[in-house]
Amino acid sequence: MNISNILIVDGASTSASYAPLFRAYGIPCIHLFSDPVIASHFGAMINQQDYVACLTHQGDITQTLERLSKWQISAVLHGLDSALAVAGAIANALNLTYVNEPELNLARRHKFEMIETVRKAGLRAPEQILSDNIQVILNWVGNRNQYPVIIKPVESAGVKGVFKCSSIKEVHRYFNKVMNSSSYYEDPNTTVLIQSFLAGKEYILDSVSLNGKHYLTSIWLVKRDNGSSPFLDNMETVDHTLPKYTVIREYATAVLNALGVRNGPSHLEVILTENGPALVELNCRLHGSLDLRLTTYACGRNHVQDVVTSLLSPDYFMTSCSHPLSFYGQAMHVLLRSPLAGRKLRKDYWSRLETLSSFVSYKSNLPTEGITPKTKDLKTAIGTLSLFNRDSKQLATDLLLVRHEENTGAMYKQD
Image 1 (tube, rainbow, N blue to C red):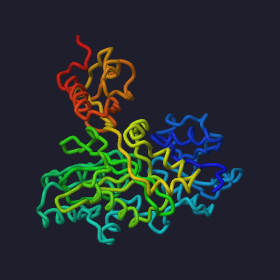
Image 2 (image 1 turned 90 degrees about the horizontal axis):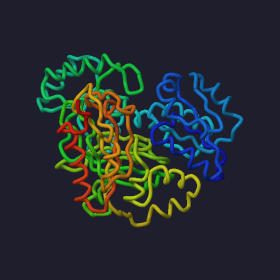
Image 3 (image 1 turned 45 degrees about the vertical axis):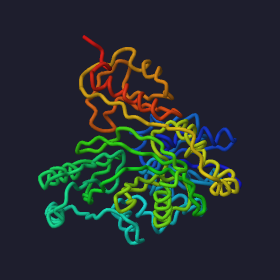
C-alpha cells in the first residue's frame, strides 16, 4: 500500500500520537472533528501543528467529503468513540480497504448490540436487557433476583454512567441518574442497559488487526474502586507470554472476529470468571490516556507503533504476528486520587513522585497548587502516574508509597 495522507477523526488522548509518528515518516495527516460539540470539548488536546489541516464535520457528509477531496486519503483512523460513525462513513465513501466489516458497525459501538452479537456467536457474555422503562428494568432484575447488577449507557466512555447496584432501590436510583444525564461525549441518554455482574479478575487486552489477522500488543490486569461507580484504581501489564493467558488471548481473538474487526486498533475488557472469559466491552480504538513508553518497555512495542507499522509495512506486520510474544517487565498506570475536596497539594508533591524507583512519567489534571476535588471518577482524579520496573516487588512498593501519602493526607499542603 502506498500511503499518501492519513485522516484522523477526533484524535484526542492516545491518538494524538498518530500524527507526529506519521509525520516522522513524511506522511501528512489531516484532522477532523466529528461535530462542533466534540471540537469544543476536546479541541485543546489537538496540536494543530501536527496536521496540514484541521477541519470540523458539520453534519453533511457530502460537504465534508468535498472539503477532503484536495487530499488523496489512504486511511481513516479515529481516536474517540464519538468518531466511529463519521470515520466509517468517510472510509466507506472513499472505498478504502483499511476498514472493519461495515454491517457490524452498530455492534462495535452500541454496547447492547455488541453483547448480543457476541452471545449469538456462542461466546460467553453477560445477560442483559435494554429499556427506557423503569418497570421493565425492575421486572427483569426482580425475576433474576441476583445481585449485584451493572447499569450503564449504551454509548459512553471512561465508566461515566456505569454503576454497580446491590438492591432494587439502587437500580431505581441509578436508572434515573443515567436517564437524566448525558454520555461522556455529551449525547443525551435515552435508554439504560442493565447487565448481570461478572465476578472475577478483569483484564484489558490491546490488539492491532490487519486484514483480519490480530496481534496482541499487551494484557493489563485491572483493579477498580469497590464503590458503586467502578472507576479505575490501577492497571498492570502481565506476562502475556505465559500459558495461563492462552484462554484469554483465544477468547479475545474470537470476539474480534465475531464483531467484524479486520483492521486497526482495539482494546477489549474481559472478566475471567470461574466459567471462563466473558466480554465486558470492546472499543475499536487505541487504549486511552497511556504513556506509550509503558507497553514499549514491557512488551517491546506499543499500540500506536503497531497501527503505523500495519499501514506502512503490512508484510512485516503480518510476519510479526507469528513471532513469539515478548515481555520484559511490569508496567503500571495509576490513577492519582484525592480523598478530600478543597485542599491544596504540597509544593513538592509532583517532584516526590519523580523520586520513585519505578517512575516513568506523570500527568497532572490540576494547575500548580490547584484546589483538589474529591476523587470519585476518572474526571475528578488529580492525575495519572506511569511506572515501570523489572522487579514486581519494587513496583508494588512504589504504589504503596503513593497510596500511603493519599490515605494519610501527606499529599496535602499543611496549614
